[in-house]
Length: 76
Image (cartoon, rainbow, N blue to C red):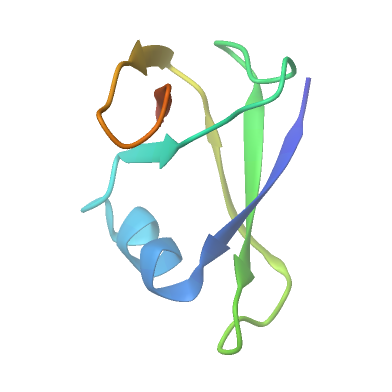
């Protein structure tokens, strides 16, 4: 299933350059599955609100964290 994800422009630039390869989210929906394609668009006041890149989800890992119940990250 294809997924649309809002990401700040600063992080989009790092994703495109290959410097950022993990995405941390406090919650993800059931549609997030290994093999799904994530289409990212720029958000925030500097964002152009357009799809700027995409990636295939390689893995999803659940991590317990002290500030919230669960932190999930997507490796793309």
